[in-house]
Image 1 (cartoon, helix red, strand yellow):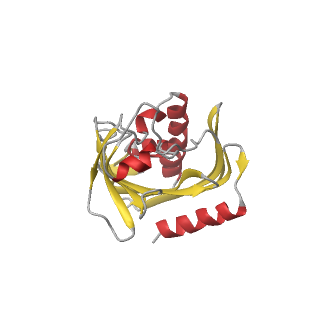
Image 2 (image 1 turned 90 degrees about the vertical axis):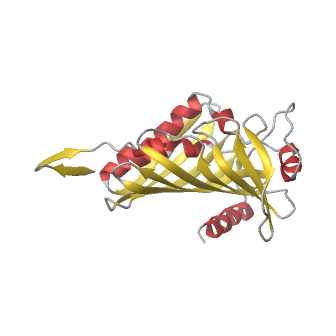
Image 3 (image 1 turned 135 degrees about the vertical axis):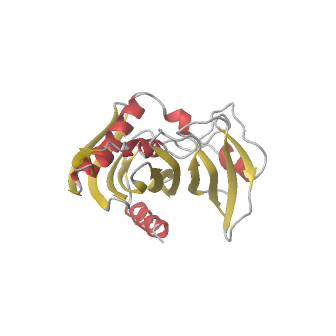
Length: 251
């Protein structure tokens, strides 16, 4: 990604990854510690439920990033794994802009590896320690819960979570990062879609758009296809469910 100024071609480091890498930390469904209780309202029943946490998985990840102003984009596919030894990835295929592949997509995976190794996951959980909860107008067939971060943090979203009509399932989380990741990146909006696969809630896709200085609006899409969750192979029915969930998210 280059700019020409005064006849001289110079490379501009737009630091795209700072706008997106932290969004991928929310890889597990929300959970409460035994001592925590959320506020009253639709969040109470949902957050009080004891869920099986995601402790390990193997998933095929498809990623796409694009800068509108520079009309550059790239795609990357990789196997990703999480277990007691940390987060690992193996790139399977890639195409498009070499700069975007290197400085965005691969950098996202590397930064996620660093964040997991650093133990930052609890900072991103949807818990009473991180959020205040409130009621918002409900949509047809859905319940909406306001998410208000208790602190400015690049791992927290100022927005809402969308639950199923009976409040038992998390469908998506949507909003804006409560703190800008860097001087270069602002107005980071994110939507994360979830599905329950063989009894475990996991994200199936993430969409994010950020305003990047000099590059304008830039976007990142990530889709997950799980092979195993918590050491168990994903069933055929669950595999079909995650495909259906991604199709719904794409509408």
